[in-house]
Image: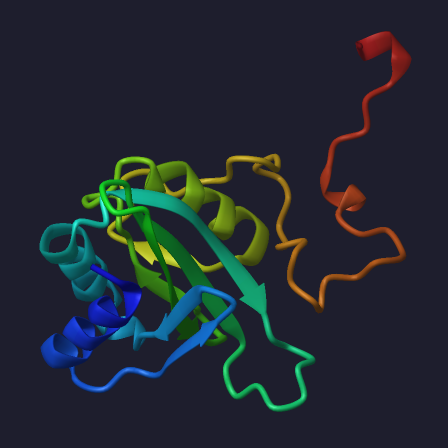
Length: 165
């Protein structure tokens, strides 16, 4: 099987989906409300048994971008060595997408990382809480509007003196 066949089967199952191919890489854009069922189809119907990564892109200052965030799911079929990238777009004020922990247990920490650094909430996640930053941290540092200078988040942390440490 090839990624072209996978894209064709996705279009047959879910209607036309924007897809692109470049240097052997295939990318498909999926509406966020169909994201879970598309990924479930890829896993159960097309053998994509390995979730390589979940990440996010902040399109805040992109000239032609309409949506704020792009969730990026990299999945692979270990039997055929086929890979495909699925992208779903979400927006402020409350960016959210369905969790895929029920499909791949490894998505647990990946979704927590995206939540921690970008603020995209995953509905249905069993334990969505910060994984890299302390609980007192109130912002999302990989967003493009996060301040690069100034006090940042330091004002939220308790001051520890030498005598207390």
